[in-house]
Image (cartoon, rainbow, N blue to C red):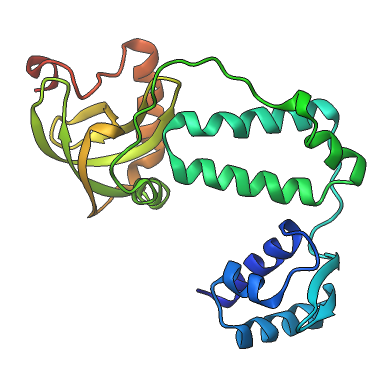
Length: 242
């Protein structure tokens, strides 16, 4: 893990965990040895972070100069809580975990009154049941990384008719909804845009092709095609996908 990422993770742990936090707990949270943890604490203190405590007692972050005080209205806090509570319905467990971590960091930096509002029972999300969410069986981080890096993916896909195809696609983005988790992509096999049900992907591996020079034009064309005609789902009949 890069040094900067390690220090950011340590600051995150100091914000989230009830103080005082033992060195053993912090080392476990950041994935380092106790000796490295003590060195990282010293580094943060040298950079200006006010961290009280010592080995054998525990540590408390009393001031974080890297993160200015935040203030949200009660309605903004409610919107954040409801949005994060809905993330598990996407079927993307990694995304849901990231949302919970981000929300915990936000709450940890709020003034006391607003932090209490965020914990109030009235802000709990009570979503109506809308059927079981089918989680994906592949690495969502790989799809996200390829979408950000604008590189191709090789996917083995089983459609609703139980047909299995091996395709190379240019991933343009992930679509989350109550009923499905979809990947919008340019299908190199069909030479057209397709929407792939992520839970029906049997395997995904990184491809070697970059589509970065074409990304902006592809996104414009994709958006235009959605207005002119529905983008076919990859489960369409063979005649539609040929």
